[in-house]
Amino acid sequence: MKTVVIFGGSGFVGKHIIRRIAKNGYKIIIPYITQVNAAKLRLLGSTGQIIPIKFQSIKEDKIQSIVSNSDVIINLKTLWDEKKQSYEQGIFGFNLSLVEAIKKIKKDTQFIYFSGVGIDQNKNSERSNSIYKSEELIKKHIKNSIIIRPGVIIGGGDQFLKGLLPLFKTFFFIPLFGTGMSKFQPVFIDDISVAINKLISSSLLGSHTFEFVGNETFTYRSFYNFLSKCFNKTRVFIPVPFNIIKIVLAIMEKTPISPLNREQLKLFEADNLASKKFKLFSDLDINPQDVRQVISNIINKNS
Image (cartoon, rainbow, N blue to C red; front, top):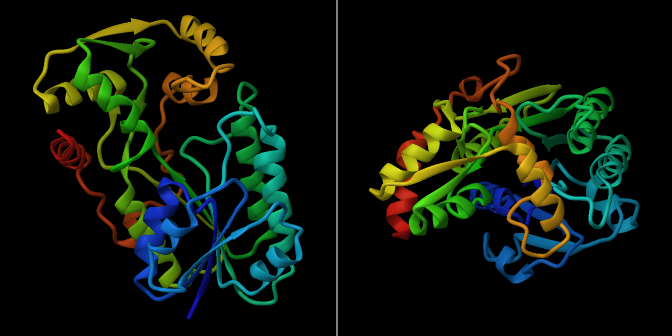
């Protein structure tokens, strides 16, 4: 029986992956720093199968022991703001400590790291730089590493649709960031979890990078039009220049009610598309589901 360790496993993506891989009977350990609902996490598998463990540092003996005895390690942990830690500490520093621990393992453990489509060196984004540096570190020092670069992930409970759908359901005027012509390729969370399950089941070794995106490319404007049709409602989109939004967010980020932060806003400024330089769902014989149908089902279920 494989032992799978998932850092950041208590979040939206982690829970979907856990539900999927738990069916294979794996022992699943979920180290966590901030408080989680451990009881609910345990219910994602059979009795005793899922083990949440609180920790503060990778360097703790119990975490070092867990890592050294694992067959698969998945890191979903990330940061979207620097209120408690800098991106350099919370993202790159965490991965640096984790890589040092993995290097000591004597067996062929898989390390799966979740990054993002379009991540590169970016002088305007400390977060992107920290993730990119983490990717390079992992590829250099871990022989069995799998980098996952997903597009915008959607599914019941995801942060993207969770923020948008109530707006379309309630309001006639909808703010549109910039011109709304930036492009993205949303991907269904179930397709992501199926892919991770295949990677673990096959014990894929070596160094690999996958870009997981859906089959359809939207602009944000065309996506908003699609959501309006799903609700069968007329909506008017109000373009808001990015420089104005940034000023507003700079103020709202200091409050607990900010709907998003400046790092999340950057996802709307540029195209968020697969580079076609890396492996895709097709390399795992997976045909991504129709995101239009997925979204329609989500809206109908919650209407």
